[in-house]
Length: 108
Image (cartoon, rainbow, N blue to C red; front, top):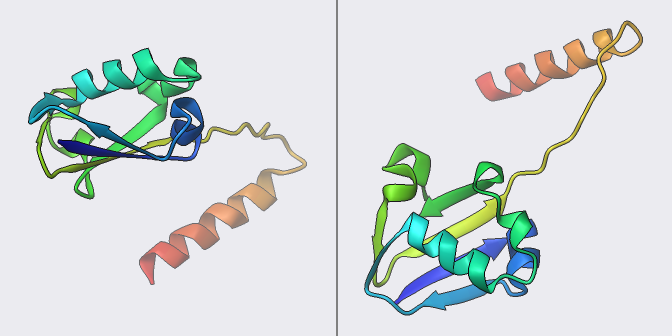
């Protein structure tokens, strides 16, 4: 069996934080289909707005939705939070300073 941990909006969509997928082998696509078919709010599980890790490794760095997982693996799914910001002359300097500070922190 495969353990699926759900965080953030994915947890809300499924109505629980952990699900056991009772197959010995499955692709990420199969798991996502299963989750959407059984979700309380399936629209939240939009493939374009979720991040998926297999045993801590980003599935996008593996084989994406074709990645195979097996019994004992832990699949973690979290929704991406999007926000909007209108950039204009009144907030450009502030935004620029925030980006600069983030880059400095990443380099430390």
